[in-house]
Length: 187
Image 1: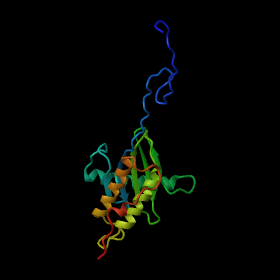
Image 2 (image 1 turned 180 degrees about the vertical axis):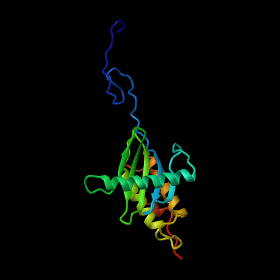
Image 3 (image 1 turned 90 degrees about the vertical axis):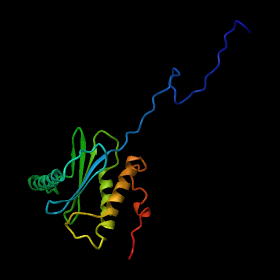
Image 4 (image 1 turned 30 degrees about the horizontal axis):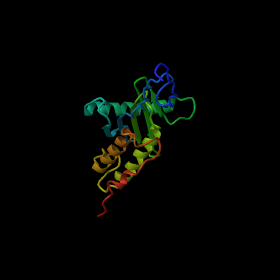
């Protein structure tokens, strides 16, 4: 009928609020790993890699200085702790997070990441990097222990692992093995 208003029930749309306005989508924070350092038991930097464009570009002398300084602070923290300690494991600031994984042989894997973002456990990522180190560096017949790491397969696999985290393929747990993409060549 022409003068009568017609009321219809609107179906509930989960993307819209009570007043019918579209709610802003919640964006998942993207992961941002910044740097990877590997320090030998004597305090020498044997590997460093920038993992994101946001990572500061430093010269080789700066990297060596950072590696030896962290090694020294790690040793001091282990000595001055009131209880038995293995040294610095985590460091969190307003701008970045730093996590250190020390192997039984004294090798230190140090990973930095941007602060304030949802991230998987840095310890999980460091252990995955350690597995790549064991597979592609230690099994390399041309690598000498305690010397700088110059292994392309290791760098490629670390880059693939970090890129998979940056792309959101990993959700905190171990992901697909990087070994499948580049199998180790046997002589």
